[in-house]
Length: 107
Length: 259
Image (tube, each protein chain N blue to C red):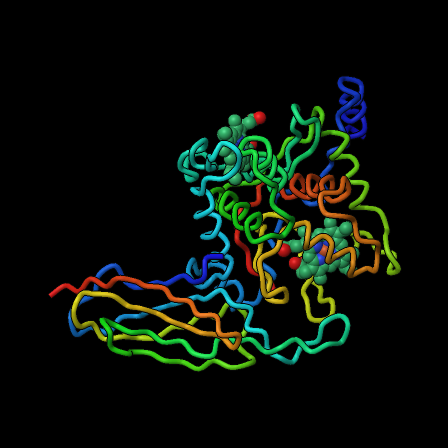
């Protein structure tokens, strides 16, 4: 499965804040559901999501139960230098994934 | 009475043509998206936030992946899907003369998978099959549905219409009773739509996943507590053909979002 889709503007101006969106494919299993046989289904949600911009942490979230499957995160970042946004996330089962997007900053 | 004479003449001219009278004329057709809450409609229309796009993108990637005995990808034979697959979904389900059966888009893709790529066909509702179907169908976004129901498709069409009008299940209801007589009314938490196939595969919040038209139809069977037809059964395919004809002219909206 494509694990995520990221959207950033094609070009941004230095000092300007721009919107970053990431849609992550994840079941976000709440831990409150039961199987057909009545056994509880273990909670498995994205435990932590971070975004680093040229190595600097610019966004961090700790989602929990109650967030729908395939969640969308939106936040703003202030443009510094051209470079890369690196997204990393880990779920309760310990599965890690990452995604990148490049940012072009006009002077 | 003029109408009766016309029908009679038509009947004499070509006996095989099925009764194609429309109970929902073009002007009365409403896509399922018109019955959505404003939030869900906005989610469907947002090319980024629509979760169905995760599957479309998955399909776009698979399009270029080589597989099977000859190591060929969809792209090796079909090139750029934006050109080669434009308008294709609008013509499905379609009768395949060589295979001598009715195929929906999923069936067509799996046929290419098995016979042209010589790889193991994808399972129903697998991420791969949903992804490729969503990718192919989204190339027809905005184009009107128009399927052929004549020639070898005619008996399938006639059966599809019969199934649409037949009462089923413990609730003893036909598709017609909900999707024509009660469209726009509420049923528990849902608003009943006219039951059109123009946004499939869809992303459904209740499923927390994308799903095919066949999965949706099975949910309707289960809703009226009727026996579930198997995936790819004649019943589901014939019904899909009838539904596509009934929605003729509606623009394709894949991937739709539903509650």
